[in-house]
Length: 220
Image 1 (cartoon, helix red, strand yellow):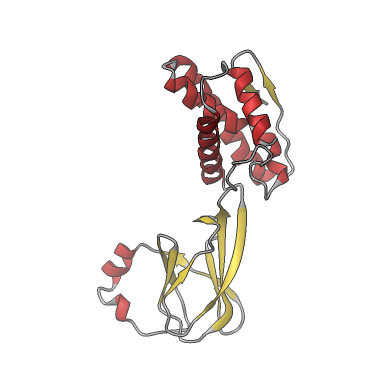
Image 2 (tube, one colour):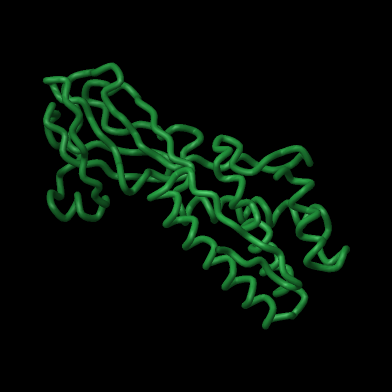
């Protein structure tokens, strides 16, 4: 389903002119980001090399968030991958007030995140090519042209595209002061998210069935 088809599906559920095309696109893109953030549906990974005595490294440019299920791994001196434990800067300081001046080591334990930067504790002693593996959730592609498709990196998510419209209908009804209908679409959206989150984890090839009734979508 491309952007033009999403607009058509929205217009079938709401009077034409209720939102401008520009407003629809804004809400569609917000919905895409919200769906990805809540379902972790666009999983990716990448590697970066460690540099001797360097603590901080940039996350991939398309990283929305670190995958909480997989996190970050480092390659030890034996070539085995070991998972790092995520800690906050507050925790690191509370555990060792002078942690930033700690010695380098090839026994890495923790990582922290600061915006689009991750830091290692302790700092690595040895530079290792591809020594860090980062598992993360992709940023969804931005919809702008009518031919653009949501979640374009994963065609298997096409059957969840109506959730984007459900989110936008919720916001549009709310904008028009139709709060009862807005709550219905909000409920529909979150019920669809729950199904999506469950099914893509246990059955990646799951294809949901949805029907358009007079005022809302039904997910089965």
